[in-house]
Image 1 (tube, rainbow, N blue to C red):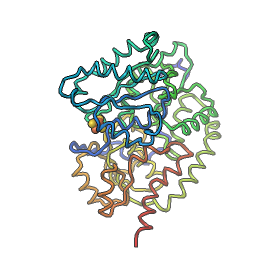
Image 2: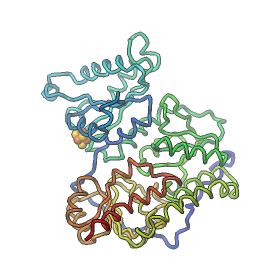
Image 3: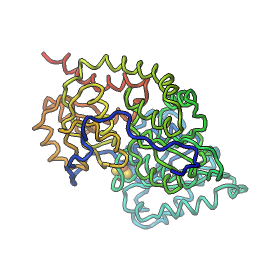
Image 4: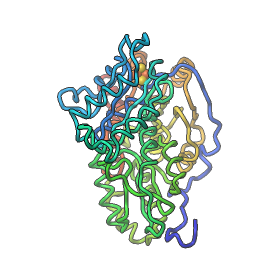
Amino acid sequence: MSADSGLAPVIAPVIAPADAGCADAPVLRERGQRAVFCGLTGIVWLHRKMQDAFFLVVGSRTCAHLLQSAAGVMIFAEPRFATAIIEERDLAGMADCHDELDRIVAQLLARRPEIRTLFLVGSCPSEVIKLDLGKAAQRLDRTLGTDRGAGTGMGMGTRVLHYSGSGIETTFTEGEDACLAALVPHMPAASAGAAPALLIVGTLPDVVEDQFRRLFAELGIDSIGWLPARQLADLPAIGPHTRFLLAQPFLGETTRALQNRGARHLPALFPFGAEGTTGWLRAAADAFGLCPMQFNRVVAPGRERAKRAIAHSQDRLRGKRITFLPDSQLEVPLARFLATELGMVPVEVGTPYLHRELMACELPLLPTATRISEGQHLDRQLDRVRADRPDLTVCGLGLANPLEAEGLSTKWAIELVFSPIHGFDQAGDLADLFARPLRRRDVLRV
Ligand code: SF4
């Protein structure tokens, strides 16, 4: 870091590991059948966050069904997503898909002129793969983007972007990564003499974002931006004086895009639990050269509150063995939280992709005996679960029922993505999400 940047050097993790934990542990890499939602699922939480955006999935009826069932409540409201369904005549090559897409976008923007950012979201069907959505987005952006929409009667100043949510290319949470990475080139450049600024990256529920905003303000960090912003018209400026903290662990592509714009990643624990949240905040505080006493004064009340809330689940979870099947990419930091703050024993921690750079603070805190796996070969993995017989298995919806039928307690991974789990004030609820299935098992046991 340059001496004149006004920022302190990036720090090491907050909890010093007793040994190297899983920092250098061998990784079981598997390829084969997998059971994970596709990247379209991210639209369910992204559309709630970005209030001036619209997600137009270019896909099949399957894609429409997935979105409707995953976010069923939206069918009663005016939604901020839709599916442009590729019909049979399109598949037979009888229609020009570009003309069809232009027609649907025109209809949409005539009806919803308030849309400021339109995401064209790609999917699996072969006709969609053949359709170059990147070019289509560029073409539509030229027509509808800033000023150029004037006089067309539709979408004046609507920015058109694209990303892929295809199940061939993305798993579950990678849709958010692809979406945020698509936004990075559109963030304004910070001026050369700009003051140091902090950027928080990853979608958080508004209530959690507001809690963190208050904490950063109390710490004295006022220059703070959020990606995604609630209004995409207000994307924060970015440049070499930007330091960014990841709020979500699945943002590898977005991290690279931000680094390409000169921003610096602050390595940190992810803000799960009392210690994770403390470590995450401390990474920012140290980078901005804040006094440790001031840091402790601001953070101590929330940290103590979180510890007390977590303690309610400790008796139920301590010593219990847990396996994570690869799903949301939250697996490694959640296993760290459960091991270090609740005394659980991770047996296998599977993750679709292991971003070592982003997990550099997390892996050393996992117990050395943890089996780390990346990717999935479903049959082999289920064989390992049956052999291990953990007390709790975190997995996708499709696997939970069969495992329950075999007498194994399960937790739906998707619940961890849809629930507010970050920060001090959610730490007790996060612990309880894991305690609940075990409580239910004990109640049902005769
Ligand atoms: Fe659509 Fe492919 Fe996702 Fe199925 S896996 S919902 S076809 S994008």
